[in-house]
Image (cartoon, rainbow, N blue to C red; front, side, top):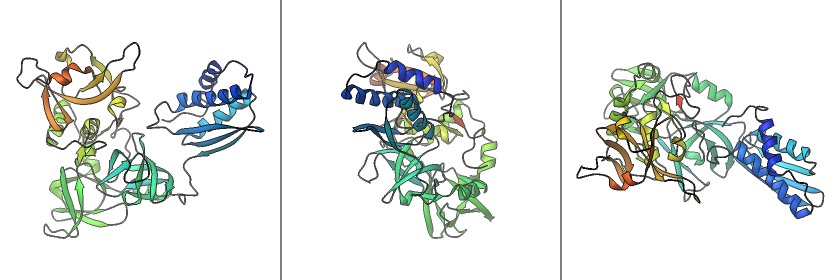
Length: 402
């Protein structure tokens, strides 16, 4: 989430003053007020901790407070200090604003360097897989812990990747990488080769959506270069020059359905967003990415994009490519929970990742009627060709080239 430095200052101050408009009477109440201020700012700048970092705490000391923590939004740290001063609260600030350029040797940008990198909640392999990033995906690099890097993907997701998954770069090196010609691999699965021969030794595996530097053409092969400098060749039948692929994209609902059907049978993988395995929102995200769109990572984020099409199970209003959301509706005591998403393909059917990627039907008269998902249906949103801050079209906002 990008916020201009002074755009929300009035909103920030108002939110904080509403939350803590009474003068504290005791040290305990003062401490609570300091934390209330921090929590109020977190609600403004980082309401979704998956895409914005504002991890700050206030600790009472003899001279006031020690404010410690970290954020990837310098403006949020600045506004916190402004509010504390406005409230006449004494404090010492030890907030670290990321990226940690010194600790990263100024390599605050990165590019995924393997076919699919696993991104985790914590900097260890035993930690939960929260998402994936495919080869050539540019990322922001915020800090290092051991052999792990805390990064942010183009859709804003924050996670940890180990050193084997990312090629760190300075801003200058990253700009050089962006300026090169690119190639996109389009076959669901494949490999790159050491020479322009079908029986050549394998350099690495590849999956649809991988982006590499295009360096040459040799017969029926493209010459490519990886972010870490490795070179290889791929058959022309499996890939296309990125710019021509992007320029010739003519996406409609049927195109999205065709892409989704190419992933039929793909196994369910919690945190998966690639042809090596997908969860429900990872499937829809992958389908749209292979058609030139970057959409939010999770179903609970995707549901806030696009325009509402249906919320009453009137499926006649749906068109191919629409996203159906499922979960638990809000009640007087609980919030709505969005826990599943699928994509409409027409004829009362939708395709989704649940166990594996397969097609289900909302036709209540059909023998294979999906009663379970029908009963937990929430609503449908249309995102194709819609303008929304959560939707990025590569033709308009290219993340791979200048």
